[in-house]
Image (cartoon, rainbow, N blue to C red; front, side):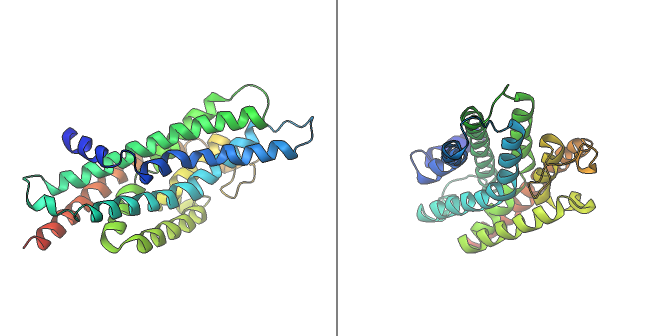
Length: 255
């Protein structure tokens, strides 16, 4: 498996795919700079307001649509490279190839999260004041990453099966479903809602971006371990199911 992951990693060196994944979080620095220019000289934005904005936009918009775009670029690059024809020449497990792609995408998603954390700190130093709230920034970033992992196998399946338009459509519908279900009791049944729901107690903001009152039930931290268990289980399950689909697809095409 390690050799497969290393081989997949080499495919994305110096590619647009890799640059997009790593540069996307810098968007928040770009919007922080003009905000600073238009702020009154004596105004300091609270860190809580900054974090409620970033950790709302990132799981609601960037993760579903970004993962859909990432999966589409991965599928397009593989198509240009021969559309998996090499799998029929070399004795390599197709399920292992698929799993390796998903693991590498998860790794790049983690790198993107690290860049996001750096971007948050830089944005805060530009527009916010006071002590950097590491106890919110670090858990928040990694919770979003962990609870978004289940997006990867589903989006890669959509991109490989039906192409970019279908993958982006799945991502868009997932975005709508996630933000709709996050404040509802049935959020546990909608994987797209998990990162958004878990941010409610972490940053104290509603999925619509409005800051929550201290007594709001959405601030209950009991949802965090539930979301983590659901996310890990779903990631493993979706990876296994989609790898079986990919294995059968390649076996049928090779006949």
